Amino acid sequence: MQLDSISSPTLVCAMDPVQFGEREKESIISIMKANDFDAIPLIDDRGAITKVVRRRFHDGDPAPEIFVIGPDEVGELLFDEDSTIMEVLTFVLSSEHHVALVGGRAHRDHCRIVTLSSLSNPSVRSYLDHKVADASNSRKTLDAHLGRQIFDQISSQASLASDPASEVSDKEFTSNAARILIGLQPLKNIGRGEADAKVLQGNSHATSEKVKEEPMASEIAIWPMWGVMEDRRNPEIQDNALRSISKANDFTNIAIFRDHGGATRPVEVNSIGKNGIIQKLKFKHQEENNNLRLIIRRLTEQLPKQSEPIVIVKGTEQGGHDGQWGIITIDELRNPSVLDYMMRKFAILEKDIKSYLISSGLKSSELRGEEKEVSRMSLGQLLSVPLKANIKLSRDLKQAIIDSRTTLVHEIYADSGNIDIASWHLSFEAEESLRKQMKSN
Image (cartoon, rainbow, N blue to C red; front, side, top):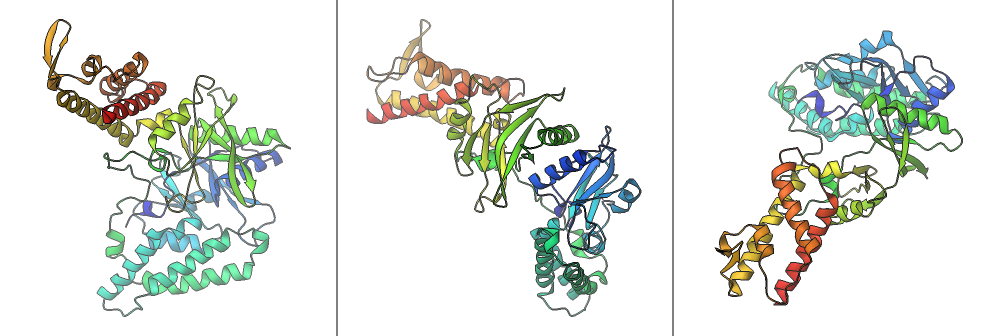
């Protein structure tokens, strides 16, 4: 099993302010709180990780709310990709800072981060189970449930670490870590085994291969949406945090989160330009199980007042994003599951119109002075054929279908065109109108 199974799918960084004044510290805290980070790397203008900031875990940690791991210690956190999960697991549990970097070098583009919260990943449970199996293969007798027991203890420690540091006893925290490390010892003694060789299939959100069903917000959205905490009293701190996370990660749209009884909720979205200018954007809320058509409608409703419409999606436990917020912009509609669905939708509509016309007795029609069989017509040609007198479709709706399909086939799939969200929205209306009229006849 590879290290990327327990490390963060995306490494989110902040810019190193070099000098840590009170405003800079509060900006880093804003980013960490908003995204529920145990730790965050700080980078220079070239992307090199110069420092790592972690939060306090227990009352024995230094008094400030965050602790800065300096350049001289960053190298000690780095594990190359040939390291085992056991090595990283042991380090995170036993070290003073409870954080590790995994990758070829300490750089934003070449490593990922592992913290205590990462260790409650189900992949860790799977790995420990496999290590117990490795022990059996080596003729050592271990309790078959040992892996699950250790994982439960690790999850409990991660949960404890998420509590405010002032409420967590140093003695309890340290004792728990020692107990876990003792439990791991028999598995460490095995050395490398099959568990360390297994290839992870991927723990990041995978694009659905289903094209028969209409895509839902859960598979279209980018998860999670990153942000900073709202700070009405000190807007400079909020803006400083926005610019820091934007520049460090090349993020454009960033959420402003507000604390709602311990949970965060986006109240604003800010767009950060290359010049650092912050622009406030409006957005629409949607649920994770809302379909593509509703997402397109919500995006269209923001036009033309806002050229970059945004939908914020609330995650659910059922959808696998409990406590998270996702973001959908027009760019996310380039998701292969969306494009495949739209192509299939137009293909089925074309087939159904042909079947309707032929069953109505219209097997051919004149097009541009020539007689052409309905079965050989394109979708655009079919929409130009006079249907029955009681089948009507406005010119705008006809054109929306034609333009959407043409652009999709000849431009968007070639990654050379822009999605006209308004036309997509009208194409759904046009299809609905056509189907209702064909069904009633």
